[in-house]
Image (cartoon, rainbow, N blue to C red):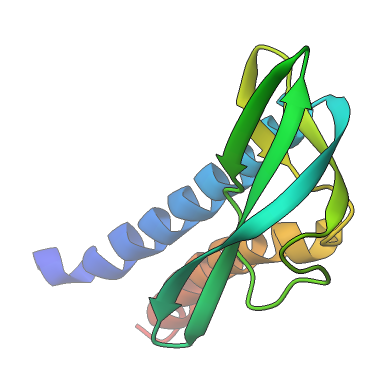
Length: 132
């Protein structure tokens, strides 16, 4: 068999791996950020993509008399708050710069991206090898 026969399998496995990594990274963020705190939205970092702009909230909050300013790791095309709003959030007690906004996106929406990347990898392999 030619090496080209294995390329779809390699790409499918790569997609599955990326999906699993993204889901695992999100799960770790949720698990480690356990301490509730109020934060003030200072603004948004904008990342322009072909599909549109992604907005990453920048929040300021106080932990044990220390002020922190952190950029949220998960971007979205729209948020239900704006600069100046006070939001409920959680931070990692071992790394206070790591934050999680658990109430702003449903868990389904957060895990949808990793899930669909994994499904895409599986469908890619099945579609190619089923008709071979």
